[in-house]
Length: 333
Image (cartoon, rainbow, N blue to C red):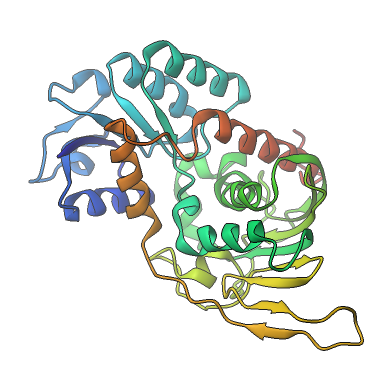
């Protein structure tokens, strides 16, 4: 049994909690939360801070606000705990560098919560693209267009830049795109906040260039209730109804691929010929559970983190560039 501490009981923390309690190979060692009622559970003791913890544990899950990720991660590493920290890995690249150094110094691992890497549809897409069956990826178009309810922004830290769709949502897409196409070499974009006029990002468009030569356009907004986005298309989040709609189209030198439907288009040599569509069968799994199982293997020394702090730092670097490129005129970064 792998014993895990959980720090933070918000939206993602609650999902981690339920998956730990339901998993036969995981044990909840304790909950850390400054609010008494949030850490009260019949399943494990509660603590106000990490310093208060007096029970044995193998690792900790940090589902806390971004500005706490670096200090809590380094404190946990020094206590001899492996760490699963939610995205973004840190508030700044400098903090991420400190975390990477602390992991090397202590010998304890950091797994970053880019859980889509564990989604069967993502894994199958990587397999299809790397197989060469539809050729070399050339261009892709991605949509992430959801409308967050007003009460989402009642939490103080979500009122500003950190609560916008770039750092909270698009960061998942960027990490997934890195799995598909390689490292990002340039970022251009534009943005606005015409609906809510709040001091944070709201809508925008981005062009990313990858070292593989692929070019990807992204249109994003958290102010429009469309069916187009990873969570809606896959049904990955219990809080967002599944629409099963395509949110990304990938054009390759010998065909194309729709995501997350994974319809593969091929068989046409040029525009005078009609391409044929072939659906792809994929086994279903809950990515957060798959991530927890991977984390247990990391703790046991059976695997290296799929997304470690160094990889997550690269995603954060791209996200910070996107924030700058798509900052509304009223928001100076």
